[in-house]
Amino acid sequence: MKWFDYAAPGSLTEAFELLARHPGARPLAGGTDLLVQMRAGERQADLLVDVKRIPELNELGCDASGTLRLGAAVPCCVISESELVRRRWPALAEVAAMIGGVPIQSRASLGGNLCNAAPSADGPPVLMVLRAICRVAGPSGERRLPVEEFCIGPGKTVLAPGELLVGFEIPPPEPASGACYLRFTPRAEMDIAVAGAAAAVRVEGEAIGWARLALSAVAPTPLLVREAGEYLAGKPATEDAIRAAAEIARDAARPISDVRGTAEHRRRLVSVLAERALRVAVARAREAQA
Ligand SMILES: Cc1cc2nc3c(=O)[nH]c(=O)nc-3n(C[C@H](O)[C@H](O)[C@H](O)COP(=O)(O)OP(=O)(O)OC[C@H]3O[C@@H](n4cnc5c(N)ncnc54)[C@H](O)[C@@H]3O)c2cc1C
Image 1 (cartoon, rainbow, N blue to C red):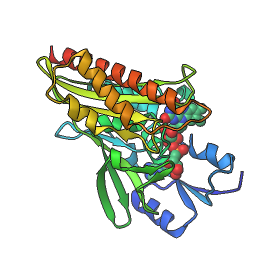
Image 2: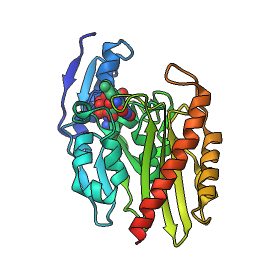
Image 3: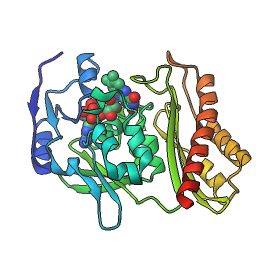
Image 4: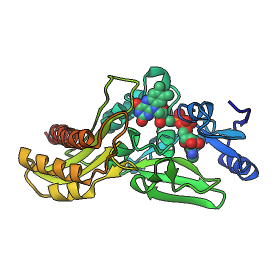
């Protein structure tokens, strides 16, 4: 592994200065993607700018409107153990407890998970169905965008050089709503998804008010399948409707064949996982309605 320098700024301003002064610098959060890639020679950096000491990136709490403000560098174990997250956004706590194993979760962040832009990342589909907004900041100010617009290709994001993902804003859960993420991995843990599906649903009596469905590992980026949600909105929450929405998701998937699975296997997995995730989300929404 090539030698590199290390800096741990205590503020966003200091971090922006370091990133501007060193074109070969890269942000470091938990390092569970970046250090592995650097050791394998897949990525290079002259300077690692550790963002874990920046207060804004470590935020975890609600603002006055009940919106969750989640810093990009908050470790997954803090998210999955947070009483607030477990109570209000259980699907988020669940996915944080799914990434790697306990040692990985003590370092890995959902910000790093998104910025690494792996199609197979588990966090982005959940953030998408929960309507998370990314807060991105750089020397010239802050901008905000929905999570589904953040990744633009494998390993590629909308971040400009010198910009950081500061965190996420996740709106409060609506009454009678529920969410869920399911993935298929050959091993129970410490494995990467062959395919994954996240669903969020609001029920209104026997009908679905709105629904959102997002997929992992079946397209060049994590994928929000808007058409599936649009199909379900206003329909009775029946098995047939759920199955039809899962078929829409399957048709939207653009999987590849690789060592982990064939494209055909992945398409089949999308049908099964999307259907199951929608069913769990509807059940959770009904529980919240009761
Ligand atoms: C054994 C093992 C098991 C794993 N299991 C899973 C799994 O089950 N599911 C899964 O999705 N992933 C898994 N991963 C991948 C990895 O752990 C996750 O993607 C993790 O969430 C990355 O977060 P991090 O904080 O470690 O990111 P880092 O490695 O620190 O950073 C990742 C990338 O994001 C950039 N970056 C980080 N923070 C910021 C920021 N705030 N602003 C701008 N750029 C930033 C870095 O420069 C780097 O390019 C696993 C990895 C290992 C080694």
